[in-house]
Length: 298
Image 1: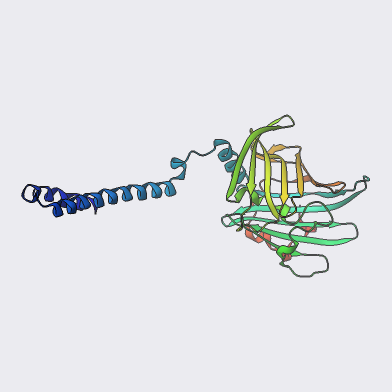
Image 2 (image 1 turned 120 degrees about the vertical axis):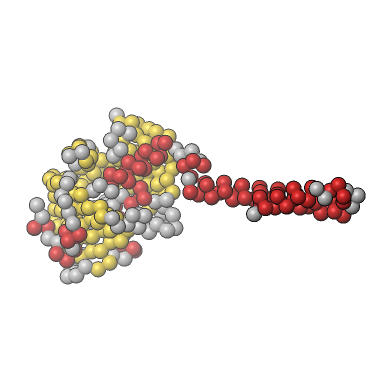
């Protein structure tokens, strides 16, 4: 449209000789040129904005540390396909331990991650959970809790409840923070002897979570977290997770132990992985909560 405008005004230039004495026409011609120039500027700005939306990486330089840490963490989760057996232990401030049997399996499907786990222990009935994290990081939890015979959706109000009395909550079973929209790269730091990227994930109004932010120290060489601090919404209370015994099996990195400790609460809890497979070749039929039995898992 702007090119047609310019062509027309070029034709009008030939009439200037005849109408040069007309002050009214002079004002008209100046206005026409101004409108066409403004139209061209608007078109250029619109194209720049559109280009920025379609190609944000070209319009704004991305933080390479954030990009590597975030992409690596998401890709790790998107390759999950495992079975595992282990134990979940609550360690009291006086050293007393309570052990629970922990069995789990997980697989990333085209519509996101499914994690099925069962916890059983002394003097307690089994707790079975099915967590589904969608591709954008939205979480849904189904559960068969002690005293219940059928699976039902776990209300969000219970997501931060203690899992069988430990420092792990229901929500802590998945790493959905890496899929939140708001991600910030903090200055790299050492955690122990490991050089780490530090990534702060902040939840938004669209994220159903009890955490305001999650800060992860991610080993630069293997792109696996070694330390994570979660900050609860409203209270600012923090929960710390430390990953021990990092190992690579079949090209997949994992931790043999994860320790959780809630700020201001004596003691801690430890999830220990004792056996399993990092390439379990699981399908959707393996995630039927009603049929899941820890006794049948190998």
